Image 1 (cartoon, rainbow over the protein chains, first blue to last red):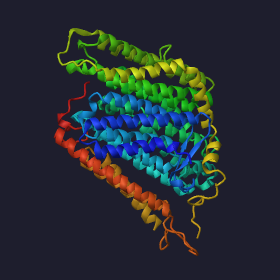
Image 2 (cartoon, rainbow over the protein chains, first blue to last red; image 1 turned 45 degrees about the horizontal axis):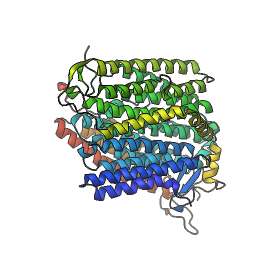
Image 3 (cartoon, rainbow over the protein chains, first blue to last red; image 1 turned 180 degrees about the vertical axis):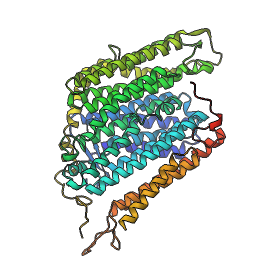
Image 4 (cartoon, rainbow over the protein chains, first blue to last red; image 1 turned 120 degrees about the vertical axis):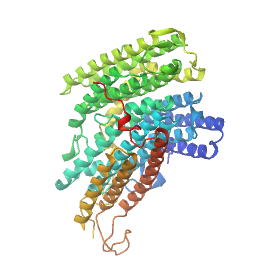
Length: 514
Length: 116
């Protein structure tokens, strides 16, 4: 058996355990080990992504237990792409943290590895209960990472964040067990099959479970009305953690995408297209409220957090509109928005540290120590996130607009996306003019110039964003292939359970055999 | 039996949600615990309520209880326990830092009036 698919899980799990044992009191060793493990994980992710180009599903049976009984990992184009994206963001965030952030609390590197394990696991798993477990792994690590460095504001944000997510976990469990009760399986491929065959009497239960799943994933993805935890959480997290959190909302988006295409897609019988009528208006509202929040933000961190929400709104709008072309645009936009939001969180920290007591508040303060470099980085970042040509954001939005042109709700979608792009541009210009131009003559005495390693991390993310433009053609073709694969759930089912469809933990229906 | 279980689950869930919506962290912790009890029992009942049957299929067994939900409950209990312990620690720490056990970190009287 080829073990490639399990490496993005095994490497951080092993590294995290080693870091807990050996890294607690040796910060430099922990830093080296963390960076090495993340680089190794990135190499494995790159190999997995290269492997997925063939379009085959790589199914890995954990412990070699056959599919419907054991837990499987399934690496297709989408999973491999997102695991690779996670590695890129993680590498940049960790390299940034290695310039001092990681020393502000204990076990930063161990927690970081466990967070990576949870995220990669959520992207790769082919089992619904296992998805819950990986959600919990990434959440508990994120709670601790959010608290990294402590402070009253972080504690308050953490109390809200933890309470919301614990409630979400409860609802997730209810939905999962309800689906198990009706279908007798937790394997996502077999669930897809059995939901389509569910008896008439159970359809209402299946639909209820599906919508509960949407609710849970909406909490993770920060969809209206469940996004209110996000701005305070992301704005108060330390910079490298916030940059890593940029991928966390995408875990929710991925889960929605996976569940809607696989289990509640076009061929799912009475449960077909369950989610999209709810998703479209909610996503449009999320987009609108995200940019309104960005316009009203009082701090740069809050502004970036609201732009994260807006990017989720754009993505889910496109997912809800459906169709292969729209989905391809959404996938390109997903990669772009994650990279640029992570870069902006790092940039926020660099700017905040050079403004003394004002930090990242959008008020007049002393001059920046490195105004030219920071100004260029901000210009690039703001133009990209708002979608000004010729940035990756512009290309992504063009693909989305072209992809949704035929959809029934396209006037709504086009109007909201275009207006929100303008609003995002206004919000970024306002922030930029305050931060870069409305300044005193002297830098604040406690202002710290950014270090070389920090510039390197930020520059790397910016460079990735530019590469997304340079290689937009091949990337778009890959996104199209990925979208096509997503819209062929029958292939997924065939690869995972094969002909083995009759056997399952329990037969379909209400009664156990007696 | 089914009626008793389902109505009991409903009551526990309702109490959990009520406590979850209170303003003090301790009530929130209790609410989350109640909610996770209800959820665990719910998972358990999704394997159907069967009495006096073994959870393992053996030769010639007339009936069996579904063992999978029991395994799921075990996982959910462990995770829920860890999360509750973490949240308790977090609540105590937040109380220590801010001097208030309100979930917003300040007493209602201390909060500034909303600008009109």
